[in-house]
Image (cartoon, rainbow, N blue to C red; front, side):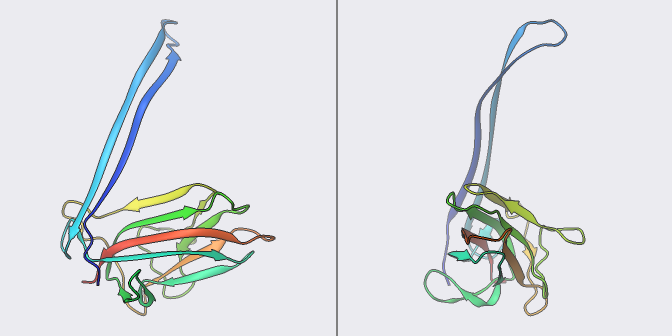
Length: 173
């Protein structure tokens, strides 16, 4: 089992220029939003002890079932047994022609942050999907071994394979 100490920082810094529709004057609004997700080693709130990271490709029109508890291995070759997920990051290769889709599995679905009858997020070439639930008092989204632990990745189209990197961070308890 790995013992991560992770800092995930989102920073959006810049400005937006425009003209006021009321006064006609030029305006320049500063944008400075920063959010930190810090996950120290452990299994409680604000902690993580397990990282699933895999890079691969999915055949044209193909799908891939990612088992978050019991079938996948971490970067050290140890079996991953996630019981709570605190962050999901999906990076789609910029060389892709099609989108990479992420959703709950067709069976034994890990629903986590997804809701609705057929939830899916399409990640375009060179783009990323990131969602977190791991700071403060949050214990993460529950993973239920053998009944709620499958995350599905899919290639949105025919003709070419898609490349991806998936990172799932969580705890084993």
